[in-house]
Image (cartoon, rainbow, N blue to C red; front, side):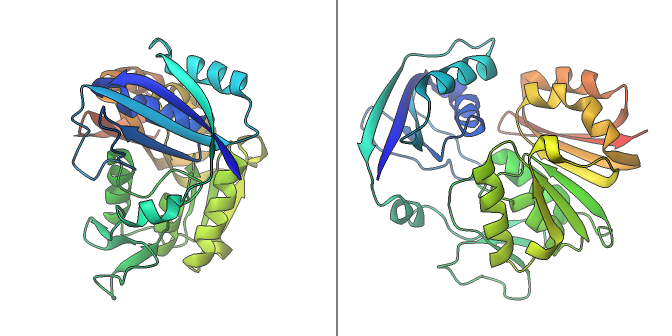
Length: 293
């Protein structure tokens, strides 16, 4: 099997937003390369790439539409200009083995651990989520995912609640909510591969019965007890009214995937419907916690 690879030339300041944009347009994986061609498969927690000039490499299915990928990246990155890029068709490689060298058990908050299947959970009586690198973004190593996991870990009242994980990716946040006691979680993503990954990971963690996956246009009309969305700032801004319709009064809405300089725009778009309760920053990424009025 072959793969379509796009390589974008950028700087350290724009690496994260370009990486996230690639995942949003359907990249199966994103890697970073410096001038010595040494890949970092996902930046480790509390670290950032140090290279001044960085290549961000996105891997797509060989049948991906190059023109559509370029157009989508241009739209999502605006006002950042799409950097110099190149496309290449490459042969299959042992991606999973490379991942295994970089992915280890990680703790979030007091109770949650994310553990790859090939590693013994460090605390057998903790809330352990088994999650292998796969086709969808979300293993916990990115600061935005970590911020959401840590907030969920702090909650002790999820039992009998219904939540929405909007932009579910690998399903990591939905699975965490399920293991913390939520009764049902709607897992929403515009990428069918993410829905497949969420169902697969839900099965591995024996919570698939409480997960309901769907595309955004198929999310039914109802009000949830809470919503978490770890996506990008521009989509979050456009979704403020949608989120307000889909949560009950006093429900929590937890947002991440927001760069510090974008946070005020997101806050302003949500203030019509929600009260801001919390702003937490990590490595220039922000978590915002709102409560529905």
